[in-house]
Amino acid sequence: MSILQKSNNKVSSRHQIAIKGVRDGILILPNHNFRQVLHVSSVNFELKSEDEQDALIETYQNFLNSLPCPLQIVVRVREMNIDKYLEEISGGIADEDQEVYKQQMQHYVEFVQSLITTNKILTRKFYIVVPYTASSTSDFAIIKEQLRLNANLIAKGLSRLGVRATPLTSLELLDLFYTFYNPDGARRQPITDQTINLLKQSLL
Image (cartoon, rainbow, N blue to C red; front, side, top):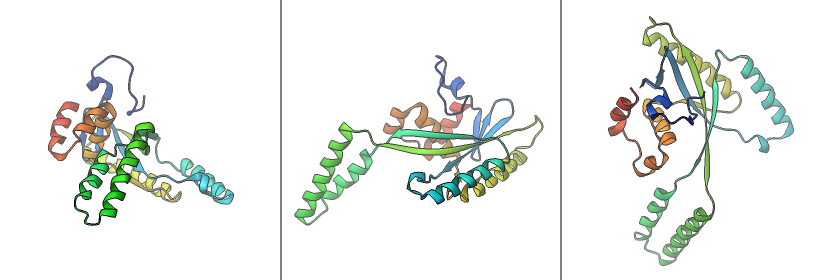
């Protein structure tokens, strides 16, 4: 099962997530399994010419054939929360001296508010999960280095496709799972550095 796939079984979140901890941007799973997650950019394939599409397909095939290890590709679709964006614009209306600009900003806020009440604005994020299984005696430094090497090779292969891959930090990893399993709570109280230790303890 994917690490970002919810289970239908009615068990605690701790058992569903099956993560022992997060250290130095690496997920620590049971049975000496470890994962590094890369956030990757996207390429608009449909806007490419036919020759460019053929070149991308061939490059992607070469990328798959050169993988140093198995991997997971995760596509996450979320409803975009633009409340903070609208609050910032609304807060700037009072500071605007020109009345015509004030009216334009107010009309813009009202337009966006009416738009999101009838249509969901979705955002897509793409991730690659790099796995590693260690022996019971493996040192964490060796595990971290092996994951780094594999992640770098994958990132270099993706760069040939015009795709940028960036490893998630520990905070970003925790935020990813926090927003996945508790989206409503994440909107009301986004994860911060002050809560990272509490989240780490809850995953142990």
